[in-house]
Image (cartoon, rainbow, N blue to C red; front, side):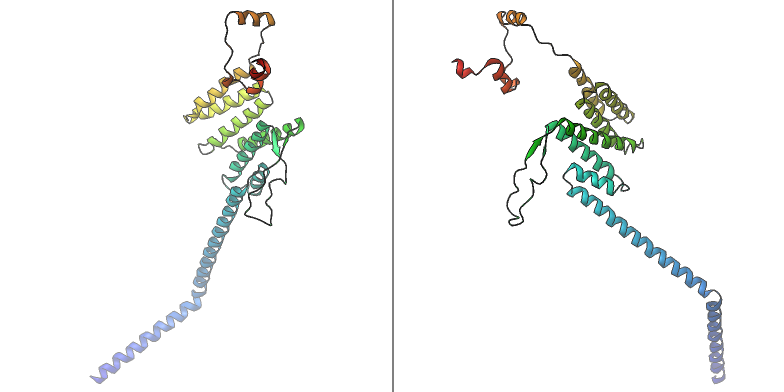
Length: 263
């Protein structure tokens, strides 16, 4: 019994010794290759994690800059600083162009430095901004910047559904710029271009675009004023004047005079 037990123990020792020798031989022959492979996988994994982290930080920085922007120039800076960030550059360009066009439509812009908050009392309401009227040169400059930004959005179009709305907005923006410059043919072409793109994807914007296109006829329609004789004949036939609610009050007073003075 003891001999059998001793034999089994001896056999177990030989087996364990053989396994240890095989493992040592494997480490000497194939171990370095496997260890190198595992090390490379770990390095690649860490590189991917770091890349994704940097990408997320880059995207967060870009969108944070977008939400903090409040002027056309700041939106242009965002588009230039993050040109490779999907969607951000296009949205920033459209926003900047729309603000420029809005300034032109208002006929005035805020004077720089008039909307700063006093450091002594941060809780105090900001002062009212001061405006200055646009000169013809400044107006043309703003229109050129807006037109350039709209064109950049059009040039970046991929013809897909994802870029259709920015493309249509840019076309209608260029049409508005052309209207401001009284370039009716260019405006018509841009509206037609936007309508054609909307029809491809069966968007509901087609009707809206066609209404804008039809309204161009009112712009090109010449305004004819009646002669003095025609005006008198029209008045003697009991014609009624347009109600003041539908006429600019200053223009109404200029034409009819002050009713209080007549009474």
